[in-house]
Image 1: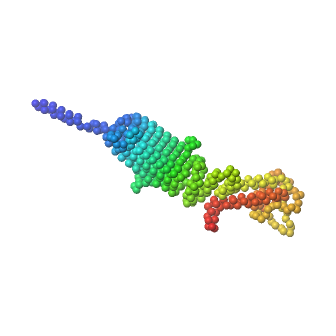
Image 2: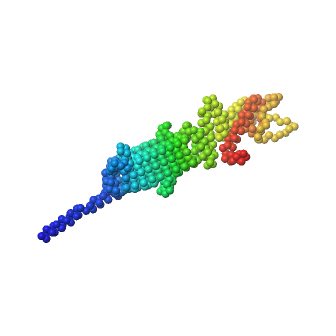
Image 3: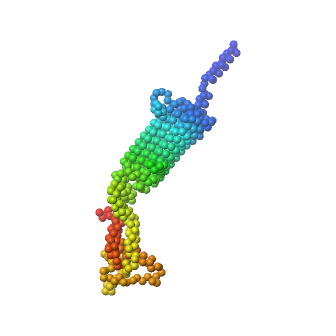
Length: 486
């Protein structure tokens, strides 16, 4: 009888031990966090952890196959709530990560942190419509295939620092609160941020900024109708084309502060038409980077923006560019005349260097006619009116010999170290320079070609006046003096 009682007691203890789920619980903890004892994990193991409401925390693992988070759906509701953290850092995804099912429009809401930093995805990543309640980490992540964050919501910001996007990337209709950081990210194909909306809450985890600092874009880039209530930084960002049709489109986008300091665009790559901003910061702005279709009105807004910042040189560049745009709409004959007499000669009043270059060309051109022997001779002075000829301004003197002047005087070039032809050329250039600029010593007068001298004198006066106007219009000091005189 006693033996039977002992047997029943031992059996009862064994049954109780079998019913206690301690080993399974220990195995579950081991599977869902830290290193589970293997570097390779099936996606089903991660799904099991999330179904059980346990946080996933892996580092340096390989996930074999597609991780389809929409399999977590247990009812007919389209929203799938993931309460536990999803941390899979510095890992290799040998497949896709799917958080959206287009068939039943299942979307995920992550109530705890999502941290995929340093991981690599060989397949596509689709977070369409996903909501990230906590700060999300995607820094140093490499997306080998497409990355889709269309209509995703980041309620407390996200990091995409140093992320690499090898194929098309979409943040269309994404909603961002408290900033997002794409610093040093690389986009090798189309990057689409159209209709994105970035707002700033009262308690940000990432202060204010949306940063694309030092990011590199290759191919099409879209910010069409995007709205940014906080500062957007593109300082030192680089934009390059894959084909001649690639453009960076900020069409109808709205910015509070847009900082493009040292941003680098290719010629005719940037579309700013219809965009709005309170402040655009870009000391290195060059109108040539804008696409030809940008309207004169858009450029006027840019000019006002830079004038308010004291960037007079940049505003002048925009004014010059506007003049070129207006010229393209005119008749071909008018375009040619305007190009020669307004652009090449005066730079529309915004390019003093144009006047300098044109002056040099004209001086050398007229010097060709003064070069032949007998065209110039030294000036003769009457003994009753002695005058010391000095290098000075001669606005009232046109160096033409009187009609009765003798043309027999020969210049003596003998006993000089330079060839006579060279000295004769220098004299012709010096004479032309004096006629054109009105700065000379008055040493020579023209015996012939008086009409040509008068023509150069008048042309030189006009070009020099245009040069002084351009200089006063573009030099901040002279401009301020003129403003005071007004």
